[in-house]
Amino acid sequence: MKKLIVALDVKTENEALALVKNLSPFADIFKVGPILFLASGPELVKRISGMGKNVFLDMKFHDIPATVQRSVESARELGVYSLTIHSCGGEEMIKAAASVSGRPKLWAVTVLTSQITSPDVVIERARLAMNNGADGVIASPLEIEAVKKACGNNFYVITPGIRPAKTDDDQKRVATPAAAIKAGADFIVVGRPIIAATDPVAAARRIDEEINGKK
Ligand code: C5P
Image (cartoon, rainbow, N blue to C red; front, side):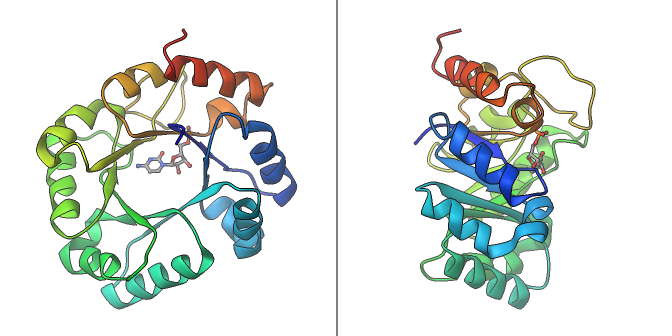
């Protein structure tokens, strides 16, 4: 599978479907978070799946174990490929999410990439996620190697905070696509550098080339 995940942080179904169609050569997984899900809902997720693409549902569940467990069941029914829970929900919550049979891949958010933190906190949360059944974590590109070292190579590390060029926005722990891939990211999540670009296809192509070492 391609390593680029495109964050569909847009508000309308039309914009989302156009991005999926146009960026299809560069990504197999598209991320749907609250911005789009609250506007277009489950039907849109089904349409993206119907286009042969995988959906990563990024709702960062952080609630009591029973609620999270049943939310994971709903996501399974929707047919998403992966979803996020927040590692801060703790041991019981992560276990409850992981216990759902036939569930999507479970990726636990460690510390938001918009926050400044020490790598130790990220590693501690990654260990907690792994020990309680998650398949991987969302971390910044700066912690990939440390998480892989602590949790092993089979534990997924997915990294937002990807910035091909220096920008001044809310993301704090950032790196270029090439640096994240070199450090061992299984997937990189890119939103605004693609979807807010004047030419999203050209932006995705450049990132694809960077991932494949052509740049
Ligand atoms: O636009 P940008 O490339 O910053 O998008 C990154 C995406 O990844 C956003 O949809 C954001 O919600 C999400 N994300 C993040 N940091 C996390 C988890 C998810 O930036 N720790």
